[in-house]
Image: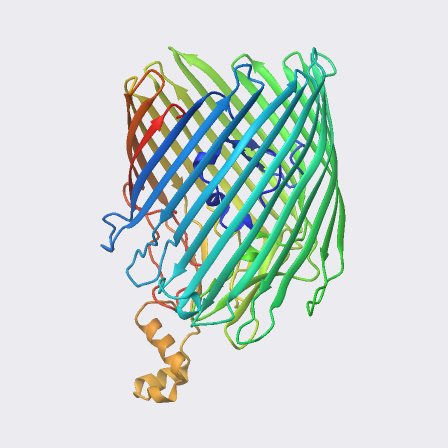
Length: 636
């Protein structure tokens, strides 16, 4: 966030959905890992969330309401999604100081698509507010500050009006996130714009959670996570054609995850981990004639410490030193044709990741995630090459990109799946796949801007992601595959924006997701002895909860055993219309409406009931959703 790696693994459990849209000014997607500035983990690229910044004086208030799952194939009731947000920006006349304020409140009801009483989308409440500001004490100095607070709660499963441990299945998470980012820019040479940057950023996440089934009182947990990043960077414009960047940074993460005791039992410490990475980097950029060369080098020293506390057994410290070179070469073959090739080395340290902090629960099993004791770092070597063609054809500006990429993974992370105890607790253990893995593919993109205020952008990627040797995806020894799970081999997008008039705009969006392999975990298959009891009507010979499991399999609510499913393909369309009314010279009222997932593309089959596989979810994040809204102000 704001070029600082403070979006931690705990915050990443639910991804970018935690960040409200009115908090974001833009999203920067930096292709490949050609820059040494964003850390050794930036391999395929970097997603950089830039928060709002004061530019002018103004305000906006936005209110919308959505109906999720309207007219779906199961004829279940739609869920309501209401949001109201407000933004305000203030800048002094001399533009030496400014402040941007934003706030949002959102309430989304849970959605049960197949009508079995268990949610496919969780109930969610979100309250966010924040500010960003700057101050220029002199022509050489600029101070910047960002602050934000996010309060969010989620509840899924069934019996949502009851306490979590009274439900058959429940997932409940309450997040409290506080973040800050401060920086100082000092121009040491105003003519050449040489600049010294000093920054500090941090994010604190407190999470109260419940993951459990069958009225389990031991499913409650409390997690605290603190992430910080401090550093300094000097940008030196050596000459008109070359520049040098020198920098150091220290990134730190401390996380403590506790399972809360019940019935007078003590709390159990699950994770108490300290991770620190000290890095130094340099990058040299040279422009010469029609070429540009960027050479980067980064050196990281990391320390991972599982700290001993109470009855928690600590592990030995894990340390590592990584030298990661980066290089990019650009060649303007013609004024309209550019060639690019990049190389990057990167790594992932063997620490706690976001999926380790999420537990999948059903009445049939509880799946937790952990690392093996001898897990080592994952190392990658990536190369990408592309041609970019820009042209003006009859007044239509066009851009076409053709790119190939290949990443070789050494000691990549993979998983083993096994039963931990007799209480249907299963463990997914992260290990190293010693034979390695690779990701390779081709990416095609096209952009066009027409004179009649129409813009089109489209892209498609063909990708192959495989381990060199089969890896387990389930509990059985035969449940193995070389394929990366949940990784489609094709995906793409299409966006069309049309300014029909000065006041009327229309937009059409489409996303394509190809098929992928998804593990589907069911109940233990019926034994010959159990089948004989059922056939003879001797149900009393079968233990009570097992009777329910057999009935669930017989009714088709869940599967028997485990299967590697190949998902269907999804082509999702959305549309949006907006019309502006001029209220004054500086203020307008906008009325808008839209439909997401117009043709209601969704997962072909859902498990039903309390024995469902909680992890067997894929496909579009929303069913058909109709939204209507109104916005007033001058910050659109």
